[in-house]
Amino acid sequence: MKEISELTFPEEMKYNKSHEWAKPDGDTVRIGITDYAQDQLGDIVFVELPQAGETFDKGDEFGTVESVKAVSELYMPIGGEIVAVNETLADAPEKVNESPYEGGWMIEIKPGDPSEMDGLLDKNAYLESLKG
Image (cartoon, rainbow, N blue to C red; front, side, top):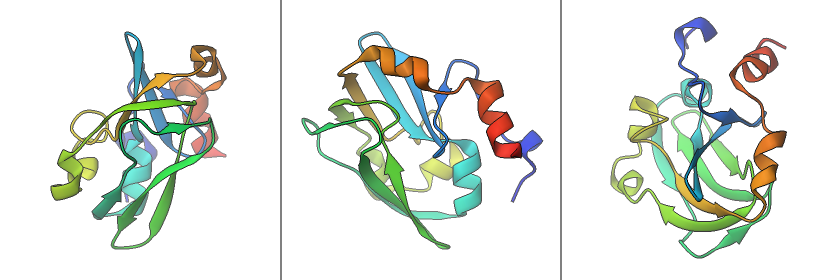
């Protein structure tokens, strides 16, 4: 495992204490797991994601990530309707390890309440939560 200082946490993302990130993009928000989460999990071998059209509330479990070490649940950082799923991960789950913020994104949603983004952590607050 890497030191926290060796991991990447983009400024434009918002973070959840359960290690998901959310990145607004126009009317939608892209969601995945943080560099810290993928590093802690180790080699990811399977990702289970919902179908487009499904709706989840903030905090709901929306899928799982299976690594050689463990199976971890994925939680919605904000609520909304799934408008896109990263289908690439079905055949190439290792993309989450290689590029958690670009190729390894998981879902894209249309937020039910965009103001829920305000309740997420910025980069500095997320880093502080990791140190605790």
